[in-house]
Image 1 (cartoon, one colour):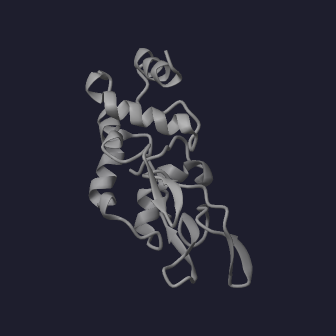
Image 2 (cartoon, one colour):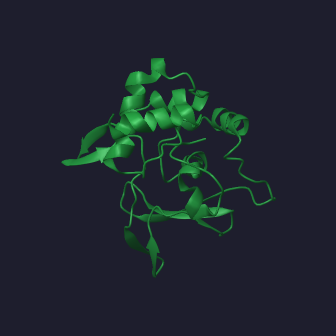
Image 3 (cartoon, one colour):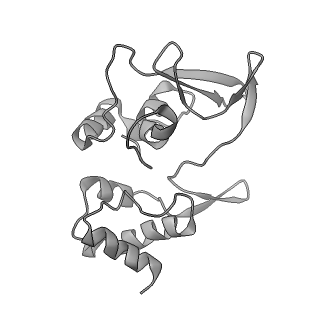
Length: 176
């Protein structure tokens, strides 16, 4: 029995959702696990609604962008630095603080660095581990339509992907 088959069996025996892939992100086994689950999903009896959503995406597949292989539907770790108003900043690395609850620096389509701020400052919390709240948020904010990283809506919808950077519990490789 190969590693991926054993991993799928482990998920089934322990009732672990497919979305909570046990392999380290960005490894070959991580992507192979999703490909195998997608192929075998009809025979997997413990799929959650979110698992079905994940398996309907292209996660686990590889595409070519500017001559390089890139994983589809999975964020890449970006270590790029840039200058913003005389300071060196990390690009696409969200942080807590600023005028709103969270902020991030990104490069717009003209190459200029912009600061994007989002989040409620009245004390509300992000319920990223509550499936009902996630589903409601995604529908209310039309997260599936958000494509522009220079807009607060994209970052709000993709907060679970950056939960560790933002000091949030839980999260994962998904949007609300």
